[in-house]
Structure formats: structure tokens, C-alpha cells
Amino acid sequence: MQKLMVSHLTEYTFANFVTLEPHRLLLRPREGHDIRILSSRLDITPAYKIRWHRDVYDNNVATVTFQEAASSLSILSEVTLEHYEEAPLDFVVADYAVNYPFQYQAREESDLAPYLQPNYPADQAFLHIWLEQTGIGQGPLESYVLLDRLSKWIAQNLNYRMREEPGVQTPGETLSSGSGSCRDYAALYMEICRLLGLACRFVSGYLHASGTGIGYGSTHAWTEVYLPGPGWKGFDPTIGELTAIQHIPVAVARHPEWIPPVAGSFVGSTQTPTLTVNVQVNAL
Image (tube, rainbow, N blue to C red; front, side, top):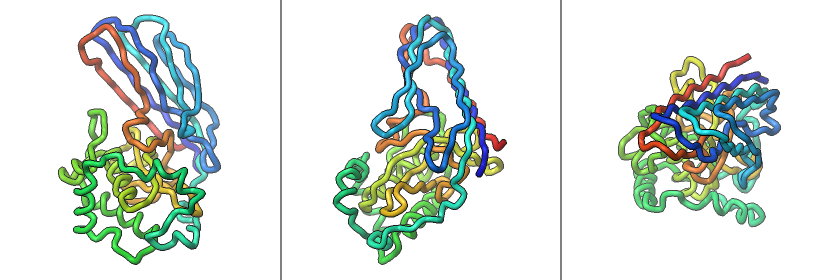
């Protein structure tokens, strides 16, 4: 077990006073058998009201409405948690899914259907050619070996770079440029898995990776693949490993554009606000 504290500060500074529209926050980690939240705190200015709910993906969503005009917006989330995922390789795949390719059982396939549909249909032909050229997915081979091979290929053959601009590159853009951020890698990994007939979803969260120089002090993104037996298993193509005790999932969705940590708008200024984000993940 590891005890961690996540501090995530988002600050917007506007050129003049603006009216803040409702903001949607995805900042509270997903609890389960592997993660237990000990305490959490949101400190927001200006004055606000907040409502919590769970969305269709069972994410913890906070909707914040503001009561006054403001020239700045500050959102500080602090969460202390215990993480128990210390043995990520300790899982057993169902017999019929040990080797790739396999067919999901009917009782799961209908629920997994949205996670098998491509997010980027225009890239499918390009990805088919890429798969043929690399040989990834050519069997026979174990399902886990395929997923691990793909994750490691992305980590070892593409150049990681932090991108400050919002949004996600298409898989074709990431492969053509040979570089991308963690969210670009996760989107690429997800699209290839779906092309191979494997259900998967995008995950946003945090990474406790002091000393690695990879995304430390920022949010992180990876992919979860549904394997019969263990269920949703996380693969991080940024580092080419299974997700483990250093990964803190916050939100999941079938499309990477749907779960930014902070989303909202404002009225009253034509100038782009100044944005400052500071994330720290520390062991306690």
C-alpha cells in the first residue's frame, strides 16, 4: 500500500471582469478495491455553488456555478488516498481469451460495443497499413503479449513531448509526426486496440513518477483494455508498462476529448485568458 497526496491547482487570469459560465470538474479519483480516498478538498474562488453527480461512466463529476463577476478563477483540488495496486501482473485471463484473437461472450459484447467503435474512422486505412508493416497483431500470440508489445512499441519508437495546447492528436498525426503527449499516445493505443477487436477506454488521471522526467508534475493519460477474467486492465504506452500503484485514475470515457479535468466558458472578454496549472503528486 502507498499513501499519496495529489494537489492540482488551475488558475485563469482574465483581461477584465467576466461572467463565468458553469464549469465541469473531473478531479476526484475513482475509488474501488485498489484506491481508497482518505480526504478531499476543493478550494474555489470566486464565490460558487457546487453539485456532485456520477456520469454514465461512473465518474465523479462536480458542476460549479458562480455567483459574481470575476477577473480570475482559481480551482485547487487536494486529495489524500491509499493505493493498493501493488501487483499489476497478478491476474488470470479467461481460458477462451488467453490467446489472440478471441471473441467476447455475448453477455459482455453488447455492453462493450461502444468501446469497440473507432473514434477516428478516417484513420482506419492508415492504421491497417501500419499494422501490416509492423507485424504487431500477427499471431498466434497471447492476448496480454499483444497488448504489452503494442504499448512498448509506442513508448520506444515515438518521441514523447509535453503539449500545452488543448485537444488530442489523431492517431494518424501521432504516427506521422513520430511524437505526442501522453494523451496522444493513449488515443493511438486505444484506436489500434479497437481495430484489433479489443474493447478499450481512455483514462485521465495522475502519475506519481518522481525522477522519471515523464509527465511529472502534470496530469496523465493511459488506456484500459477489457480482458475477460480480470476485466479492465490499464496499459500506459507513455512508459510501456501496465498501470500500477503509481497511476491514479480520475475519469474514463470512450473518447479522449470528453474528460478534461476542468471544462467551462466565460462571457465578457475577447482576449484569451492566462492559464496556469500546477500538479504535484507526493508520497506520504
